[in-house]
Length: 217
Image (tube, rainbow, N blue to C red; front, top):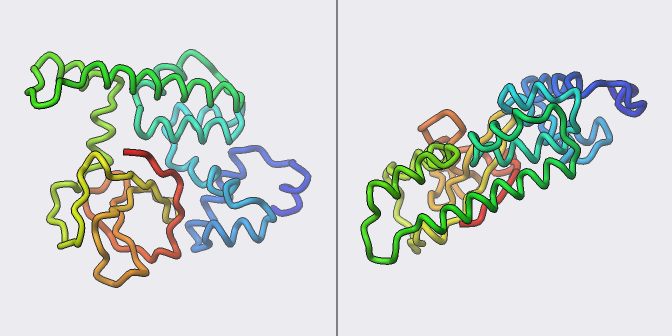
C-alpha cells in the first residue's frame, strides 16, 4: 500500500476502502497517517468517504477527495441544497466545490435572516413552514441537536443557545457532535458525543476523537 501510494498508482475508491479497513481493524487516523507518510487531514478526508451519501461517493473517480470533502461537510447541514446542486454536475474541482459551498451557505444565511421574525413577536405559521422547506436545513439541524432535550448535568455557566458552538468530531469511522455543555462521568479526559444516526450520548476518550469542523453559532 505504501509503495502504491508513493507512486500515485491507487484510485481514490481503493484508498478510501483501505483507510476504512484499517480503522475497522483498530488503527487510529494518526497511526495510518504516520505509516503511510501522509498528512493527517489527507487520512481524515478518505476516512469520511464511508459516511458520505451515495451521490458524493459516486463522484469519487471523477472529483478530487478535497472537493468531495468540502461538499460532504456542507451536506451535513444543508443536505437537500447540496444534493440538488450536485445533480447538475458529474465532477468537481477544488475551486468549484468551494464556490458551490460558499453560495449555498450564503443563500441560507440570507434567507434565514429575512425569515427571522421581529424580536418579541411570535412567528406566523407561514414563516415557519417556509423555513422548514428551505433545503432541508431544519431537518439537518434537528438531527445534529437530537439530544438537546436530554437531562443536562449541573454546570457552572449556562450559555444561551445562540452562543453555543457546534463541534463535529470523528471516532474511527463514526462522526458525531461533541456536547460541550455536558461533562463526562469518567472525568475530564473523556468527552460526551452523540454520533450521527443515534439519539444516545456516549462517552469517548478525548485522545481518540478527531475534530473535523467547528461551526459558529
